[in-house]
Image (cartoon, rainbow, N blue to C red; front, side, top):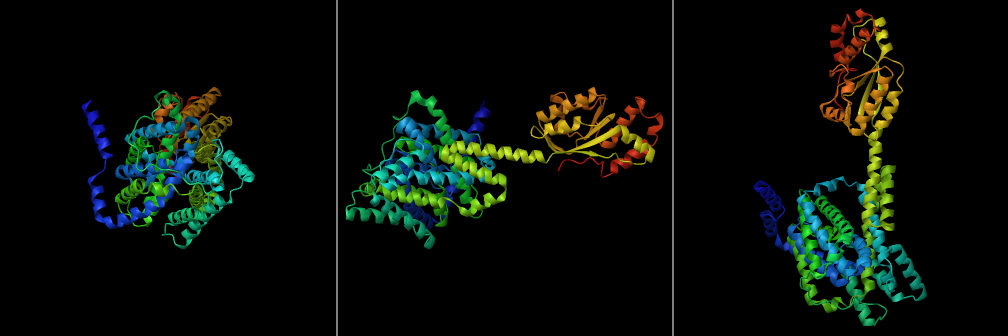
Length: 584
């Protein structure tokens, strides 16, 4: 018991900040301060916009950016990651808001945070590497489409219609705009989006999002544009920590949404950290620490009225490009947003919703990497299919279902490809030192098959069909040294095939069974059937000798057929055709 507690303590100790993190923050604080300021300027309109889109309001987005941004920066596994509310999480939160209300969203965030901490303790971060690139590209494309469609009501200046299906809500918003057009809102949204997109091409280092939002707000105030609805009043400061949002009676029904939020938070955060690694030299994030930091962030953020958070790819990329070198930059970003919450809430509350919609429309456009999509679509038909299905599922269903569908399709196609590599070929008997007549006599009664590749459930039944169609011979030798893997289904199929051949009076021997395959064959009762004389044959020549002995005892071959056995076996063992080699 003591050792178990000590191991658990050591495991959680490895997830806590290390002395090296503090050393990194002291290395070049001026550069980190500048990077943090730049990221805060970029993050402000995004935090406001995603908070509004989630249904909990702009203040929820700011609270998330401050609380979650600081804790994830301090406890996360990446020195350069910037966390906060994201578009992908907003996509998942909208239906949760519709079904359970704001209190349900906050409870879901807390439950998801606990799940992330558990995943970190179980060292689940390493499994992120198994998500295929087409799935990532597909749901990124789907997220971009959903984020863009979510902004249509605010960009058109109409009240958000009822519903949690983005396509339905968008269509109703267009219908409302057709009845009561609001060209002021359309103009502001289009202008902000155009400034961001064009400015990013001309001067990528300038934060055009905040420039465009400030300009739109000033124009709306000076011109008295009543049609440009502002965000509304914001609290001057973060609310005090509270647990009053917990819906203890509804925890069971909130479990599924919490799992979805935790899965998305883990997926997007680890993706964002990987992107940061790719943009730097010699830096590698700790995936388990990253899950731990995101878990703590999502436990704390709901207590201050924030929504679930993840690592933000766009803000992380800005952080890296502006020269951040440590966690200090992300901490500064959170501190500056906190100052804005306390000191500039009245000014922020005057930002038009249409301007924030323009920011998020431009963000959605910039999320789509045309080059990556072309590369995935042009790689293989399977990659293109996975990408398209994941994107459509994201748009029509939700992100978690989309990832599950993408992974399932990718798994099926991968299994199909692996199963196609399995080969079952008849190979000729080595002549060795036998005479032509003797060799012909042996070949008349003995047939050898070599099995190459995996023998598992996806390929096993084809093997069964081919093996049971063996012509009328007396002995079948299965050369199994090149079987790369075998599962219970493969072993059962081998057993079934051997039993069917045995009923036809055909003896089945096996050579080169690898040590790792003995257990699975023995577990289903197939191993004893492959060694009827109680022997394992390490090489095919030895199995041929056993088959010859059997045929002599059965009177099929004359007693003198094995007279050159001792000379033939060494030569046969050296033959490339019969040398037992492990599977590649």
